[in-house]
Length: 206
Image (cartoon, rainbow, N blue to C red; front, top):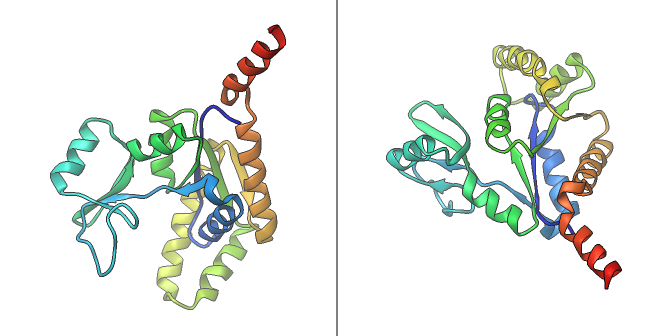
């Protein structure tokens, strides 16, 4: 048993398949894993539930969280803020859970500043040509929108070397297995098991 949980940051360009990988990983680890819930200042829609889909807060509350370093990362899109509150993440980690944070590279930098023990994974496609093929294959965007996404992807890929691990999503199940292996290895690090070491030593000395 590990003394504390794990914060796993997963980033990657649009179309690389990171959302599907995260979904499969969460299915495999069951109650051990949680996908971090974001906070937003936008209005609640339809049947959205506070604390499940988002934490819905006012502009003033969100801004206060930024000023008090209570946001792991955040960004503004139009009039609204979106970000990750640090409190719920730390609570889950204290309970020994694996918390997965799906964010862009700009958010990853702020996470490294506030929680340097976080394990960061960057998902990449097997090639730029394959990434473009996947985006085109969705059939949901115009050629101009795909071109913009490709330009953003090339910029994001330049930050891949800042992450702890690179996972190539060529075959989906292999990529899922790679992320699961990273979780297992990270939880076996010495600093994650100090309580267990003490228990063994106490037994040996009794």
